[in-house]
Length: 179
Length: 177
Image (cartoon, rainbow over all chains, first blue to last red; front, side):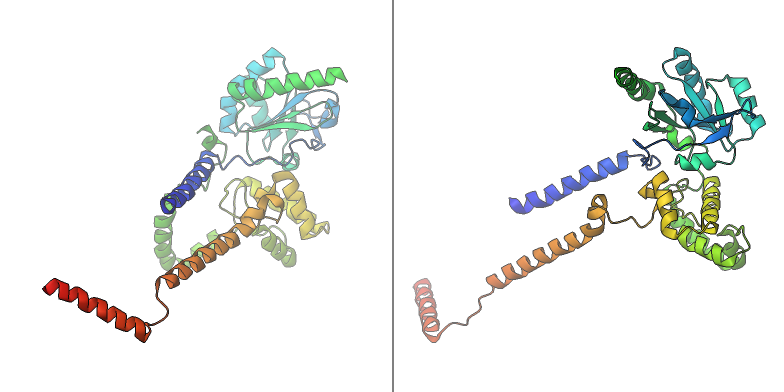
């Protein structure tokens, strides 16, 4: 009996490991920045290049940083959802316009609407490297102390917004109010 | 899967195609060896050959996160170019290879390293094969020992032989009877 059970057990363990491994999306690389301080930066704003925006300006607030670009196809899918999320006012959404041309980015916002409080223009992608960005869209949730609490790789679908972002935002706001 | 449509999915082909593709590439490379050698690598962007060599050595051990089966040295993805520029600048600023690797892993995680560091989370990866080897040896020894137990080691003594012959004789006599 045992001589059949042992290979069967080994086989089942292998099946479980392979099932987990194959079920994962290899393009979702876990970020080492979760629960670390959001990298600081100071970038010109997209709409008003003479003004700058810095992550440090957001101290004391829970906010969302969405990496987008006019050349990014998935961003176009995500965009109407972002407009909806912004309309609810649950959490301010800021944009990081990544490796884009200013005129393209402005045309994109003009055509599709602008969900962002403002967008910072990371035209050469240096700030994105600090944030470990390797694709767009990527979205970070940053807390009052400037700590990254969540990173979404790929689109923030309504499910992700409902299940990941909103509960965390509520929890962070509660914690912040308690202090 | 929606993720497949992220801005740049260049260079990621179905794994099943790799074999036939290599086969075709092999024959193509016989026809046009020169052009193939050139397509491989991006042109160096500085005129300092020592620094380029250092960059080449370092980036060969780094993964391009866009085309995950390519090294940072070989990839032509935009992000790979940016990262090579970043590494170049850090090298010019006098940073050591280790400092640069720390910089990259702090942002992109261990995944960017083709050769993962030895940490508790990678113990199984590093030492797993040796464990399997040990387990295999153990099984092998037990099997050999088991086989040896089955084979009678001592020849029969003359007493035993006589008894055996007698038994055989009596049993054959019964049969004929």
